[in-house]
Amino acid sequence: MNLGQILLLLDQLRLVILFGLGCLSLLFLILRAKWPYWLMLFLTGLPLCYPLVSHWHSAQDHPNPVTLPLKVMHQNCWGENPDTDAIFDHIQESQADVVMLQECPPKLYWRIRKELCPQGYALSSDFENYDPRHHHRYNRLVILTKGFKVLKRYKLKDHPVLVIYGRSFKTGERYRFVNVHLERCYNVTEEYYQGIANQLGNFDGKTILSGDFNLVPWSHYYLKFCQMLGLKDGLKGCGLIASFPAPRNAKAGYKAPAFLPIDRLLLTPGIRTQRVDRLPCLGSDHYGFIAQIAS
Image 1 (spheres, rainbow, N blue to C red):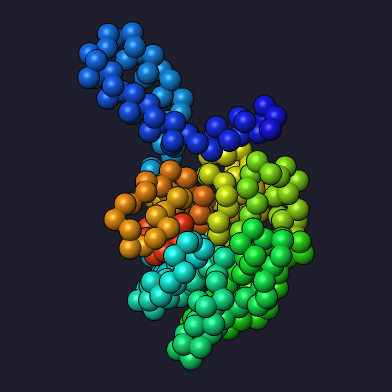
Image 2 (cartoon, helix red, strand yellow; image 1 turned 60 degrees about the vertical axis):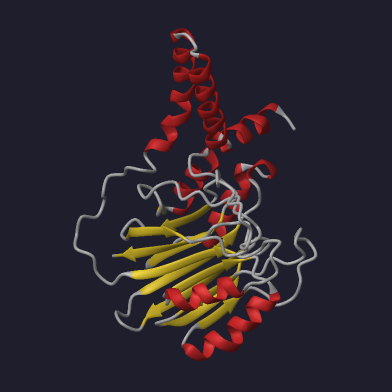
C-alpha cells in the first residue's frame, strides 16, 4: 500500500479518529491535563471535523412546497445472520415506492418474487445466478418499484450498476433509478468512477441513485463522482447516516457503533430529500435508510 492509499484510508476513517480523540479527552479529564494538551487536542480535531459540518446543516436549494413525495428504501442485505425475514418484513411495512437492495441473498430474492410482486411491485434484477468474482459469491442488485411503468432495464458493462427507466402512473414524469455497489475506493482510481459516469450518461428526467458506495461523502473521489454524474448528495444536511458496520446478528445484545457513512443517495438537482430515517439492524452488516423524496 503506497502513501496515497494510506492517506485515502485515513480520510475515510475521520469519524473513527475523532472517536479516539474523544476517548483521549476523557483520559485528559481524569488525569487533569494542563491546558497545552487540551489546545493540542482541539487543534488536531478541528481540521478533522470541518468536512463533516455541512452534512448536518445544508442550505435548502428548493424552497417550494412539497409535491409528489416518493419513499425510497435502501438496504445492503448481506450479513452473517442468514435469516432475511427482518429485511422482507421491513419492505412490507415501509410501503416504499422504490426499494434498492444490494447483495440480495437467493432466499430473500425468491421470497420477494413470490410474495411482493403479486402485491404490485415490479421486480428488476441484474442476474439470478452466483457471481464467482464477488467475495460473497453473489452480488445481486434488486430494484423494486410501485406506481411506475418500467420502460427499460439494463446492467452496466463490467460494473455492478443496475439501471431502470420508469414513468410515473400519477404524473407521467420519467424517472431513472440506479442501484450501485461500488468497489472499495483504495482498490480503484478516478478512472473507475469516470467509466461508470460515462456509461450512465445524461438523462432528461429525474434520477434517483442509491447504493453501497464503499466511499465516504467527504472523499475527493465521491465529490468528483457527483460532479461527473451531475447529481447532488441526497443525504447532505440530513446527518451523516453512518451505515457501517452494523451488528451482523440482529438478535445480539451488542450494538456496534457505525462510523462509515458509505451507503449513499444521489439525486437530480431539481428534487430534494425531505427526511431520512436510518433503519434498525436487520441482520445485515449495513444499516439501511428510508428517504422521503420530494419535487
